Image 1 (cartoon, rainbow, N blue to C red):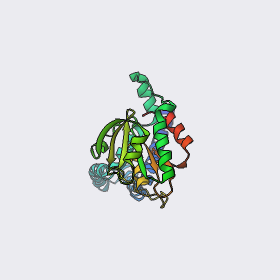
Image 2 (cartoon, helix red, strand yellow; image 1 turned 120 degrees about the horizontal axis):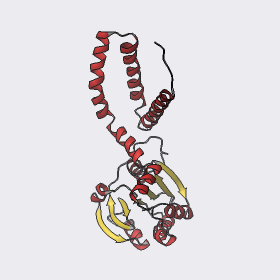
Image 3 (cartoon, rainbow, N blue to C red; image 1 turned 180 degrees about the vertical axis):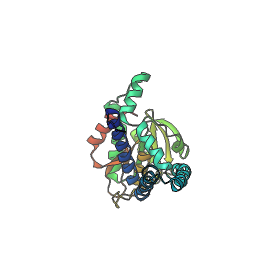
Image 4 (cartoon, rainbow, N blue to C red; image 1 turned 30 degrees about the vertical axis):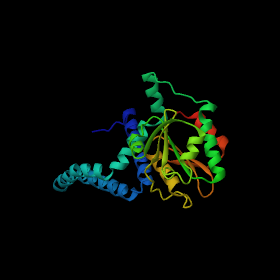
Length: 255
């Protein structure tokens, strides 16, 4: 029997390679790399025993382990699997395709729309008032909204500064902005456990990173210690940005 290698086989190998590469990246980010390598070695061993050596007894035993192990892997890697599908669903090209077929238009914001946020962050930066502002994009943040105080108010510089004033009862939590309105404040946000973050970044920065990893929201942080303004988006930070950079980011984004 001769094995013919065609274009379909090349595509098959390419897709498997891409899948393994992104699985490797995902496990590396979630600190599950050793488990990933362990599972990979077991799969290679299983294929070697059952397909190459054709050991029926051991191969059958390993087949049973694999059938049960698939369910165990779903439980073990449920957070990573959720993040994998979330990354696919929120990819910019995928979102563009959804908007194209649904007829939804990407909303652009003018300078007047974003300046209350920019000016509030600039003022709090000068006074070293800590703040955490989360701007909703395509994915709803209802669970986080319910953890705080519902506001539903027009975005204004004075209101933002009053909420994050040091003696305000809501200044410790996060503010959520959606549909160009301040939806809630004092919200509890997920904190990232990423060990690669600089140690000088505090809890606000870790909460900003956490919500940017779990959703497609954009999070703005004003440091209480340094007054620096930072932005977290899709699990990455832009640290120590200027007011002009913040204005550009918010103008190019949609919320």
